[in-house]
Image (cartoon, rainbow, N blue to C red; front, side, top):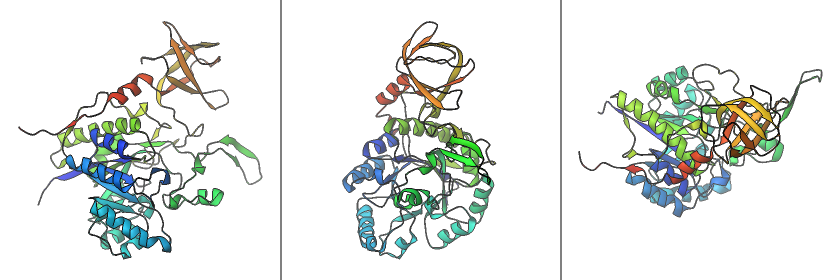
Amino acid sequence: MSLTRKLELLAPAKNLAVGRAAINHGADAIYIGAPDFGARKQAANSINSIEKLIKYAHIYHSKVFIALNTILYEHELEKVQELIHQLYNIGADAIIIQDMGILEMDLPPISIHASTQANNFELEQVQFLDKIGVSRAVLARELSIDEIKQIRSNTSIELEAFIHGALCVSLSGQCYMSQAIGRRSANRGECAQACRLKYTLTNIKGKILVKDKHLLSLKDLSVGEKVAQMAYAGITSFKIEGRLKDEAYVKNVVAYYRQVLDKLIESETKFQKGSSGTIYPGFIPDVSKSFNRRFTSYFLSERAKQMASLHSPKSFGEPLGTVLESKNRHLKISTNLKISNGDGLCYIDGNEILKGLRVEKVEIDYLLVSEALSIKKGTQIYRNHNHAFLKELDKSNEIRKIKLFG
Protein backbone atom coordinates (compact mmCIF):
# COMPACT_ATOMS: atom_id res chain seq x y z
CA MET A 1 0.00 0.00 0.00
CA SER A 2 1.40 3.40 -1.02
CA LEU A 3 2.30 5.76 1.78
CA THR A 4 2.13 8.76 -0.52
CA ARG A 5 -1.01 10.70 -1.42
CA LYS A 6 -1.61 12.37 -4.76
CA LEU A 7 -2.57 16.03 -4.62
CA GLU A 8 -4.81 17.13 -7.46
CA LEU A 9 -5.09 20.63 -8.90
CA LEU A 10 -8.62 20.84 -10.32
CA ALA A 11 -9.34 23.58 -12.85
CA PRO A 12 -12.54 24.86 -14.48
CA ALA A 13 -13.19 24.87 -18.22
CA LYS A 14 -16.08 26.57 -19.97
CA ASN A 15 -15.10 24.94 -23.26
CA LEU A 16 -12.51 22.78 -25.03
CA ALA A 17 -10.02 25.61 -25.61
CA VAL A 18 -10.01 26.67 -21.97
CA GLY A 19 -9.72 23.03 -20.86
CA ARG A 20 -6.65 22.48 -23.03
CA ALA A 21 -5.11 25.69 -21.71
CA ALA A 22 -5.70 24.56 -18.13
CA ILE A 23 -3.96 21.24 -18.80
CA ASN A 24 -1.05 22.97 -20.52
CA HIS A 25 -0.62 25.19 -17.48
CA GLY A 26 -0.55 22.38 -14.93
CA ALA A 27 -4.05 21.13 -14.09
CA ASP A 28 -4.21 17.54 -12.83
CA ALA A 29 -7.93 17.46 -13.56
CA ILE A 30 -10.59 19.50 -15.34
CA TYR A 31 -14.26 19.93 -14.58
CA ILE A 32 -16.49 20.91 -17.46
CA GLY A 33 -20.20 21.20 -18.14
CA ALA A 34 -22.17 18.49 -19.96
CA PRO A 35 -24.52 19.38 -22.85
CA ASP A 36 -27.20 19.96 -20.20
CA PHE A 37 -27.93 19.65 -16.46
CA GLY A 38 -24.88 21.57 -15.23
CA ALA A 39 -25.00 24.34 -12.61
CA ARG A 40 -23.67 26.83 -15.19
CA LYS A 41 -26.16 26.73 -18.05
CA GLN A 42 -24.01 29.11 -20.10
CA ALA A 43 -21.07 26.69 -19.93
CA ALA A 44 -22.56 23.64 -21.66
CA ASN A 45 -20.43 21.55 -24.03
CA SER A 46 -21.10 18.97 -26.73
CA ILE A 47 -20.19 15.30 -26.30
CA ASN A 48 -17.73 15.69 -29.19
CA SER A 49 -15.89 18.57 -27.48
CA ILE A 50 -15.77 16.73 -24.16
CA GLU A 51 -14.36 13.63 -25.86
CA LYS A 52 -11.58 15.70 -27.46
CA LEU A 53 -10.70 17.20 -24.08
CA ILE A 54 -10.65 13.77 -22.42
CA LYS A 55 -8.25 12.39 -25.04
CA TYR A 56 -5.94 15.39 -24.62
CA ALA A 57 -6.05 15.28 -20.82
CA HIS A 58 -5.28 11.58 -20.66
CA ILE A 59 -1.98 12.14 -22.51
CA TYR A 60 -0.76 13.71 -19.25
CA HIS A 61 -2.73 11.35 -17.00
CA SER A 62 -4.96 14.32 -16.17
CA LYS A 63 -8.61 13.57 -15.51
CA VAL A 64 -11.86 15.07 -16.74
CA PHE A 65 -14.93 15.36 -14.51
CA ILE A 66 -18.33 16.26 -15.93
CA ALA A 67 -20.69 18.57 -14.04
CA LEU A 68 -24.27 17.23 -13.90
CA ASN A 69 -24.99 19.10 -10.70
CA THR A 70 -28.52 20.45 -11.02
CA ILE A 71 -31.69 19.29 -9.32
CA LEU A 72 -33.60 17.11 -11.80
CA TYR A 73 -37.25 16.78 -12.74
CA GLU A 74 -38.88 13.36 -13.08
CA HIS A 75 -39.24 13.65 -16.85
CA GLU A 76 -35.49 14.31 -17.24
CA LEU A 77 -34.20 11.17 -15.52
CA GLU A 78 -34.13 8.92 -18.58
CA LYS A 79 -32.25 11.53 -20.61
CA VAL A 80 -29.72 12.01 -17.79
CA GLN A 81 -29.14 8.27 -17.53
CA GLU A 82 -28.45 8.06 -21.27
CA LEU A 83 -26.10 11.03 -21.00
CA ILE A 84 -24.11 9.42 -18.18
CA HIS A 85 -23.62 6.29 -20.29
CA GLN A 86 -22.43 8.44 -23.18
CA LEU A 87 -19.93 10.20 -20.92
CA TYR A 88 -18.65 6.90 -19.56
CA ASN A 89 -18.23 5.52 -23.08
CA ILE A 90 -16.04 8.46 -24.16
CA GLY A 91 -13.78 8.05 -21.13
CA ALA A 92 -15.02 10.59 -18.57
CA ASP A 93 -13.33 9.98 -15.22
CA ALA A 94 -16.22 11.06 -12.99
CA ILE A 95 -19.54 12.87 -12.87
CA ILE A 96 -20.30 15.62 -10.35
CA ILE A 97 -23.86 15.46 -9.04
CA GLN A 98 -26.21 17.23 -6.64
CA ASP A 99 -29.40 15.19 -7.12
CA MET A 100 -29.03 11.87 -5.27
CA GLY A 101 -31.82 10.43 -7.42
CA ILE A 102 -29.07 9.70 -9.96
CA LEU A 103 -27.84 6.93 -7.64
CA GLU A 104 -31.11 5.04 -8.28
CA MET A 105 -30.37 4.84 -12.00
CA ASP A 106 -28.86 2.00 -14.01
CA LEU A 107 -25.36 3.50 -14.04
CA PRO A 108 -22.09 2.43 -15.64
CA PRO A 109 -19.09 1.95 -13.30
CA ILE A 110 -18.14 5.64 -13.27
CA SER A 111 -16.88 7.54 -10.22
CA ILE A 112 -19.40 9.86 -8.60
CA HIS A 113 -18.48 13.12 -6.89
CA ALA A 114 -21.00 14.90 -4.66
CA SER A 115 -21.13 18.58 -5.62
CA THR A 116 -20.79 21.27 -2.99
CA GLN A 117 -24.43 21.94 -3.96
CA ALA A 118 -25.24 18.70 -2.08
CA ASN A 119 -24.84 20.47 1.28
CA ASN A 120 -21.48 19.00 2.29
CA PHE A 121 -20.94 21.29 5.26
CA GLU A 122 -21.16 18.83 8.16
CA LEU A 123 -19.65 15.50 9.17
CA GLU A 124 -22.94 13.55 9.08
CA GLN A 125 -23.61 14.45 5.43
CA VAL A 126 -20.12 13.42 4.32
CA GLN A 127 -20.39 10.18 6.30
CA PHE A 128 -23.67 9.48 4.48
CA LEU A 129 -22.00 10.04 1.11
CA ASP A 130 -19.13 7.78 2.15
CA LYS A 131 -21.53 5.04 3.23
CA ILE A 132 -23.53 5.00 -0.02
CA GLY A 133 -20.43 4.69 -2.20
CA VAL A 134 -19.83 8.21 -3.49
CA SER A 135 -16.15 8.54 -4.44
CA ARG A 136 -15.60 12.16 -3.44
CA ALA A 137 -17.27 14.98 -1.53
CA VAL A 138 -16.77 18.57 -2.64
CA LEU A 139 -16.73 20.33 0.71
CA ALA A 140 -18.59 23.55 1.45
CA ARG A 141 -16.50 26.71 1.26
CA GLU A 142 -17.64 27.68 4.76
CA LEU A 143 -15.63 24.94 6.53
CA SER A 144 -12.54 25.66 8.62
CA ILE A 145 -9.29 23.69 8.69
CA ASP A 146 -10.34 22.11 12.00
CA GLU A 147 -13.71 21.04 10.58
CA ILE A 148 -11.97 19.52 7.56
CA LYS A 149 -9.68 17.57 9.91
CA GLN A 150 -12.71 16.25 11.79
CA ILE A 151 -14.35 15.06 8.57
CA ARG A 152 -11.11 13.46 7.38
CA SER A 153 -10.66 11.60 10.68
CA ASN A 154 -14.14 10.09 10.47
CA THR A 155 -14.49 9.21 6.78
CA SER A 156 -12.53 7.47 4.02
CA ILE A 157 -14.08 9.34 1.08
CA GLU A 158 -11.87 11.63 -1.05
CA LEU A 159 -12.19 15.28 -0.04
CA GLU A 160 -12.17 18.22 -2.44
CA ALA A 161 -12.12 21.89 -1.43
CA PHE A 162 -12.17 25.26 -3.14
CA ILE A 163 -9.01 27.34 -3.02
CA HIS A 164 -9.78 30.22 -5.38
CA GLY A 165 -12.62 32.10 -7.04
CA ALA A 166 -16.04 33.59 -6.46
CA LEU A 167 -17.95 33.03 -3.22
CA CYS A 168 -21.70 32.63 -2.70
CA VAL A 169 -23.17 34.69 0.12
CA SER A 170 -25.53 31.80 0.90
CA LEU A 171 -24.72 28.16 1.52
CA SER A 172 -24.21 26.48 -1.85
CA GLY A 173 -27.29 24.51 -2.83
CA GLN A 174 -29.51 26.42 -0.43
CA CYS A 175 -29.82 29.81 -2.12
CA TYR A 176 -33.27 30.49 -3.55
CA MET A 177 -32.87 34.25 -3.97
CA SER A 178 -32.49 34.16 -7.76
CA GLN A 179 -35.52 31.89 -8.07
CA ALA A 180 -37.61 34.08 -5.76
CA ILE A 181 -36.71 37.34 -7.48
CA GLY A 182 -36.48 36.38 -11.14
CA ARG A 183 -37.70 32.77 -11.47
CA ARG A 184 -34.14 31.70 -12.34
CA SER A 185 -33.03 28.86 -10.09
CA ALA A 186 -29.40 28.52 -9.06
CA ASN A 187 -30.12 24.82 -8.54
CA ARG A 188 -31.04 24.58 -12.22
CA GLY A 189 -27.93 26.37 -13.50
CA GLU A 190 -29.52 29.79 -13.98
CA CYS A 191 -28.33 31.90 -11.03
CA ALA A 192 -29.00 35.59 -11.77
CA GLN A 193 -26.43 36.64 -9.14
CA ALA A 194 -28.87 38.79 -7.22
CA CYS A 195 -26.24 38.96 -4.47
CA ARG A 196 -24.14 41.23 -6.73
CA LEU A 197 -26.82 43.96 -6.86
CA LYS A 198 -27.07 47.12 -4.75
CA TYR A 199 -29.18 47.09 -1.59
CA THR A 200 -30.20 49.53 1.12
CA LEU A 201 -30.08 48.47 4.76
CA THR A 202 -32.66 49.85 7.21
CA ASN A 203 -33.35 49.21 10.86
CA ILE A 204 -36.67 48.03 12.30
CA LYS A 205 -37.96 51.62 12.36
CA GLY A 206 -37.17 52.19 8.70
CA LYS A 207 -34.12 54.38 9.27
CA ILE A 208 -31.58 53.98 6.48
CA LEU A 209 -28.29 52.65 7.83
CA VAL A 210 -26.52 51.99 4.53
CA LYS A 211 -27.77 53.15 1.13
CA ASP A 212 -27.11 51.62 -2.29
CA LYS A 213 -24.21 49.33 -1.45
CA HIS A 214 -23.39 45.81 -2.63
CA LEU A 215 -24.18 44.44 0.81
CA LEU A 216 -24.36 40.77 -0.24
CA SER A 217 -21.42 40.74 -2.66
CA LEU A 218 -18.47 38.84 -1.21
CA LYS A 219 -14.82 39.22 -2.11
CA ASP A 220 -13.16 36.34 -3.94
CA LEU A 221 -11.58 33.37 -2.20
CA SER A 222 -7.79 33.00 -2.44
CA VAL A 223 -5.91 30.73 -0.04
CA GLY A 224 -2.59 29.98 -1.71
CA GLU A 225 -0.75 30.44 1.58
CA LYS A 226 -3.02 27.87 3.26
CA VAL A 227 -2.80 25.06 0.70
CA ALA A 228 -0.24 23.16 2.80
CA GLN A 229 -2.51 23.30 5.86
CA MET A 230 -5.39 22.02 3.76
CA ALA A 231 -3.29 19.14 2.42
CA TYR A 232 -2.22 18.09 5.92
CA ALA A 233 -5.87 18.38 7.03
CA GLY A 234 -6.82 15.77 4.43
CA ILE A 235 -7.75 17.56 1.21
CA THR A 236 -6.92 15.57 -1.93
CA SER A 237 -8.27 17.87 -4.64
CA PHE A 238 -7.73 21.65 -4.71
CA LYS A 239 -10.45 23.30 -6.76
CA ILE A 240 -10.43 26.58 -8.66
CA GLU A 241 -13.89 28.07 -9.21
CA GLY A 242 -14.78 29.59 -12.56
CA ARG A 243 -16.54 27.66 -15.33
CA LEU A 244 -17.48 30.99 -16.91
CA LYS A 245 -13.96 32.46 -16.77
CA ASP A 246 -11.92 33.11 -19.91
CA GLU A 247 -8.73 31.42 -21.08
CA ALA A 248 -6.36 34.12 -19.79
CA TYR A 249 -7.81 33.89 -16.28
CA VAL A 250 -7.52 30.09 -16.21
CA LYS A 251 -3.94 30.09 -17.52
CA ASN A 252 -2.74 32.51 -14.85
CA VAL A 253 -4.59 31.07 -11.86
CA VAL A 254 -3.79 27.44 -12.72
CA ALA A 255 -0.09 28.22 -13.24
CA TYR A 256 0.02 30.03 -9.89
CA TYR A 257 -1.47 27.16 -7.90
CA ARG A 258 0.64 24.65 -9.85
CA GLN A 259 3.69 26.39 -8.41
CA VAL A 260 2.18 26.41 -4.92
CA LEU A 261 1.41 22.68 -5.01
CA ASP A 262 4.75 21.75 -6.60
CA LYS A 263 6.62 23.58 -3.87
CA LEU A 264 4.70 21.60 -1.24
CA ILE A 265 5.19 18.27 -3.03
CA GLU A 266 8.94 18.86 -3.43
CA SER A 267 9.30 19.53 0.30
CA GLU A 268 7.14 16.66 1.58
CA THR A 269 7.67 13.00 0.63
CA LYS A 270 4.14 11.98 1.67
CA PHE A 271 2.65 13.91 -1.27
CA GLN A 272 2.99 13.40 -5.03
CA LYS A 273 1.69 15.04 -8.20
CA GLY A 274 -1.67 14.01 -9.54
CA SER A 275 -0.57 13.83 -13.19
CA SER A 276 2.47 13.77 -15.47
CA GLY A 277 4.52 16.53 -17.02
CA THR A 278 6.23 19.77 -16.12
CA ILE A 279 4.98 23.21 -17.10
CA TYR A 280 7.09 26.05 -18.46
CA PRO A 281 4.92 29.17 -18.42
CA GLY A 282 6.12 32.15 -20.40
CA PHE A 283 5.02 34.51 -17.63
CA ILE A 284 5.21 34.93 -13.86
CA PRO A 285 1.82 33.82 -12.44
CA ASP A 286 0.10 36.37 -10.21
CA VAL A 287 -3.56 35.90 -9.27
CA SER A 288 -3.97 39.58 -8.39
CA LYS A 289 -3.50 40.40 -12.08
CA SER A 290 -6.62 38.45 -13.08
CA PHE A 291 -10.26 39.25 -12.31
CA ASN A 292 -10.82 39.61 -8.58
CA ARG A 293 -13.02 41.54 -6.19
CA ARG A 294 -10.06 41.61 -3.80
CA PHE A 295 -9.37 38.54 -1.72
CA THR A 296 -10.47 36.84 1.49
CA SER A 297 -9.62 33.56 3.21
CA TYR A 298 -13.30 33.38 4.28
CA PHE A 299 -13.73 30.87 7.18
CA LEU A 300 -10.68 28.69 6.58
CA SER A 301 -8.60 29.72 9.62
CA GLU A 302 -11.07 31.96 11.39
CA ARG A 303 -13.96 34.15 10.37
CA ALA A 304 -12.32 36.74 8.10
CA LYS A 305 -13.00 40.43 8.67
CA GLN A 306 -14.24 42.66 5.85
CA MET A 307 -15.11 39.76 3.55
CA ALA A 308 -17.66 41.76 1.53
CA SER A 309 -16.93 43.75 -1.62
CA LEU A 310 -19.32 46.57 -0.74
CA HIS A 311 -18.28 49.10 -3.36
CA SER A 312 -18.56 46.98 -6.47
CA PRO A 313 -18.96 43.39 -7.73
CA LYS A 314 -16.53 44.22 -10.54
CA SER A 315 -12.82 43.46 -10.69
CA PHE A 316 -10.36 45.58 -8.73
CA GLY A 317 -7.29 43.78 -10.03
CA GLU A 318 -3.88 44.42 -8.47
CA PRO A 319 -2.99 47.26 -6.06
CA LEU A 320 -0.91 49.65 -8.16
CA GLY A 321 -0.04 52.59 -5.92
CA THR A 322 -1.39 55.79 -4.39
CA VAL A 323 -2.24 59.15 -5.91
CA LEU A 324 0.35 61.91 -5.58
CA GLU A 325 -1.41 64.43 -7.79
CA SER A 326 -4.31 64.63 -10.24
CA LYS A 327 -5.39 67.47 -12.48
CA ASN A 328 -7.63 67.35 -15.54
CA ARG A 329 -6.45 64.27 -17.47
CA HIS A 330 -3.06 64.10 -15.78
CA LEU A 331 -2.51 61.56 -12.99
CA LYS A 332 0.67 61.09 -10.97
CA ILE A 333 0.94 58.06 -8.69
CA SER A 334 3.51 56.47 -6.40
CA THR A 335 4.26 52.95 -7.63
CA ASN A 336 7.11 50.51 -8.22
CA LEU A 337 5.23 48.73 -11.02
CA LYS A 338 5.57 49.36 -14.74
CA ILE A 339 2.49 50.89 -16.36
CA SER A 340 1.64 50.51 -20.06
CA ASN A 341 -0.51 52.38 -22.54
CA GLY A 342 -3.94 50.74 -22.55
CA ASP A 343 -3.91 49.69 -18.90
CA GLY A 344 -7.22 49.92 -17.06
CA LEU A 345 -7.19 51.58 -13.64
CA CYS A 346 -9.83 51.97 -10.95
CA TYR A 347 -10.29 53.63 -7.57
CA ILE A 348 -12.94 54.26 -4.94
CA ASP A 349 -14.03 57.90 -5.13
CA GLY A 350 -15.20 60.25 -2.40
CA ASN A 351 -18.75 58.89 -2.69
CA GLU A 352 -17.43 55.35 -2.14
CA ILE A 353 -18.17 54.33 -5.72
CA LEU A 354 -15.71 52.33 -7.84
CA LYS A 355 -14.63 54.43 -10.81
CA GLY A 356 -12.61 53.28 -13.80
CA LEU A 357 -10.32 54.96 -16.31
CA ARG A 358 -7.87 54.02 -19.04
CA VAL A 359 -4.21 54.98 -19.48
CA GLU A 360 -3.95 56.74 -22.85
CA LYS A 361 -0.23 57.53 -22.63
CA VAL A 362 2.56 56.98 -20.12
CA GLU A 363 4.66 60.15 -19.78
CA ILE A 364 7.88 60.58 -17.78
CA ASP A 365 6.26 62.21 -14.75
CA TYR A 366 2.57 61.42 -15.12
CA LEU A 367 -0.12 59.37 -16.85
CA LEU A 368 -2.43 60.82 -19.47
CA VAL A 369 -5.78 59.16 -18.74
CA SER A 370 -9.08 58.83 -20.58
CA GLU A 371 -11.04 61.48 -18.71
CA ALA A 372 -10.64 64.58 -16.60
CA LEU A 373 -10.57 63.83 -12.90
CA SER A 374 -9.77 65.13 -9.46
CA ILE A 375 -8.70 62.39 -7.06
CA LYS A 376 -7.74 62.99 -3.46
CA LYS A 377 -4.04 62.59 -2.69
CA GLY A 378 -3.30 59.22 -1.08
CA THR A 379 -6.20 57.40 -2.79
CA GLN A 380 -5.41 53.75 -3.59
CA ILE A 381 -5.24 53.01 -7.30
CA TYR A 382 -5.81 49.50 -8.67
CA ARG A 383 -5.02 48.09 -12.11
CA ASN A 384 -7.82 45.83 -13.36
CA HIS A 385 -6.55 45.52 -16.92
CA ASN A 386 -2.82 44.82 -17.32
CA HIS A 387 -2.19 45.20 -21.03
CA ALA A 388 1.38 43.84 -21.05
CA PHE A 389 0.53 40.86 -18.83
CA LEU A 390 -2.44 39.88 -20.99
CA LYS A 391 -0.16 39.87 -24.04
CA GLU A 392 2.19 37.49 -22.21
CA LEU A 393 -0.74 35.21 -21.36
CA ASP A 394 -1.94 35.25 -24.95
CA LYS A 395 1.46 33.98 -26.15
CA SER A 396 1.64 31.21 -23.53
CA ASN A 397 0.41 27.98 -25.15
CA GLU A 398 2.11 24.58 -25.45
CA ILE A 399 4.20 24.55 -22.28
CA ARG A 400 3.70 21.14 -20.63
CA LYS A 401 6.29 18.46 -21.28
CA ILE A 402 6.72 14.85 -20.15
CA LYS A 403 10.25 13.66 -19.42
CA LEU A 404 10.92 10.42 -21.31
CA PHE A 405 14.39 9.50 -20.02
CA GLY A 406 16.40 10.05 -16.83
